[in-house]
Length: 81
Image (tube, rainbow, N blue to C red; front, side, top):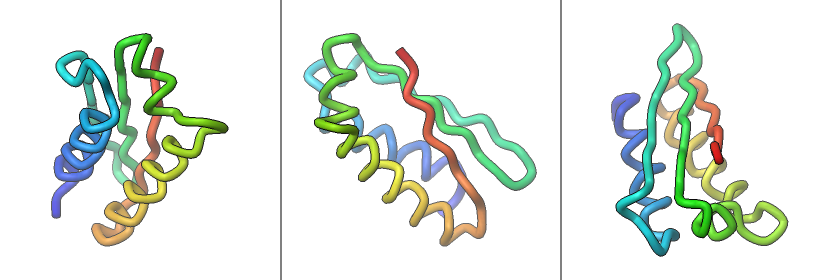
C-alpha cells in the first residue's frame, strides 16, 4: 500500500457517501513523516460526508489512520468547503 492508496481509499468512501460523486476532489500533500489529505465536495454533500455530530468524518479518519499506520506514516484528513 502506497501513500496514493490512502488518497484513493478516502476518495472511494467519499464518493460512496456523496449524492454528487463527480464533484469529489481529493488531493494529497506529502511530507517527510506526514501526509495531508484534502477532501473537497459539493456544498450539498458536505453534511453527508461529515455526518451527524461528525460521526462519518470521524469514521473516515479512523479508517485512513489505520491504513497509514500500516505504511508507518501519519495522515491527516482536512475536509474543505
